[in-house]
Length: 283
Image (cartoon, rainbow, N blue to C red; front, side, top):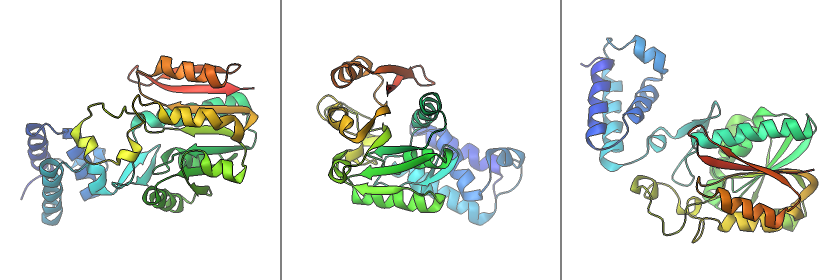
């Protein structure tokens, strides 16, 4: 029989010895015991139930020995205060993307000031961005597009669980929207942006869908696709918001000037001080 303290200490040491994150095993412990972190802290000297200790040990071994993301083991990731189902069919939502959602909400308030607007999340994956916006702002009518059938199924399940009333289209980037001749006020996207030949962490490369990771030779393929046709699906007054690689600030600025020369735009840093988001406003 082990206490919470003993089980957690073993798991942290086991993870660190294999160059894995000790914070990940804490998430597994919270998941298995259905406790928040403060509850585990309060119970550190209490004995774990045998069944919970067995399951925790099993999951730690899978995470460390087989390099399976803890989010896949738990089946979800928390994003903007809500649980989103994830699988190997979708990109695991990142904390930086929560900042994109927050900045879209702030810019919406500045530009549209509470008006009813139509929003599209292009290449939605798990639905984290579009569904979060739909849940946060009642005046947003949200549409989500996704090329992958498997990813779309995950997003639809998340919409159902969150009771979010949204519209889905399957297709590549803006194509299904162009086919339907739809118009929007806000376009938001976190498309694949890793250059095709760039070395990335094998843990990411081996567990997340390449369709959601790689953005052509220079990582800008999908930004070009979106910006080339964005004016065809946007109303004259609009917001375009992107997440992108930290080293693409100047390249993104060039693309914006090429396709929206009259727009005002700003590249925002994430909490780590990296250039992570570009917000474009046409008024």
